[in-house]
Length: 359
Image 1 (cartoon, rainbow, N blue to C red):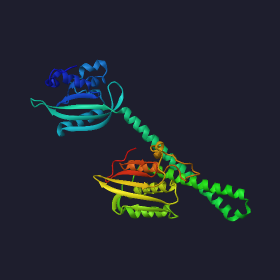
Image 2: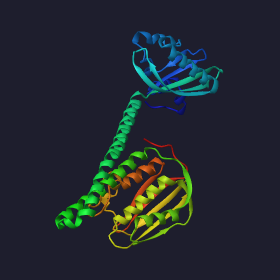
Image 3: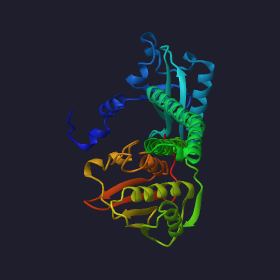
Image 4: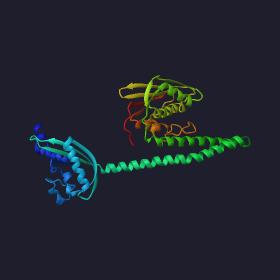
């Protein structure tokens, strides 16, 4: 279709075309709640023998008393306030049950008559998909939580038994058996760490939202002391007060510092933690002078159980950076990796005010 001049955009033919092209259910009601105009999608929800009677009637008699009362209440609100929006589950005259997002807006004609324009979008499939996703996520979180707890106790007993045998009978064991016991101990510690990280990951679906003010440098130095027990690393950090969700930020910073130490290719290294106040965000960078991250791993390192090296070379559960990404995104921020042939910088964008959590 071509339009000869701009006035054609307001022509009755064009407006009729536009009205019927709307993918949702579109209708116009007068102050008596009668439908005076409806698009093809709206008429299609009625059986064929009822469609010619829709225009000029309220059609409320075709619905249950509960739906009827709700329709009229929302219509009244739209006429009184100028706008109404609601999500409603309706049994339609064609026998189908649908969930609709319905928006109604008041308008006036040139002659001063008052009407409401309603547009209803069918969100039945989206709501069902969301429900299934939430149910699946809930089951997964529950499984991880229960599995972690149920495995922790027997693992602790196994580890305690191994430690006792080592302490009481190590001298009576051959060198080969001692080596086997050492391997068992290492693997027990790994499994314990994995369970702890899985449990932490499962609890990250909801953030605390408790913003606290703390000194960035003090936190970074405390974490370095905890993680770098041999004092092989130097750390430079911005000495400033910040206000962030302390618990979540500490988990993120601990994982990033731990990751830098574990993957460093030299005995001694340098770390830097800096922060900038940019508009509504904090821009935080954690930099190391290690071996860097190969290009093919730069996206994958944020996935669960991704390791650059085997556990025999570098200890770790492979979940740390997945936890970092999950926390930051739950807080409405983002994380990015910059890395060359040597060194790596994790850049965090962290909102000063918490965003609404996502599922």
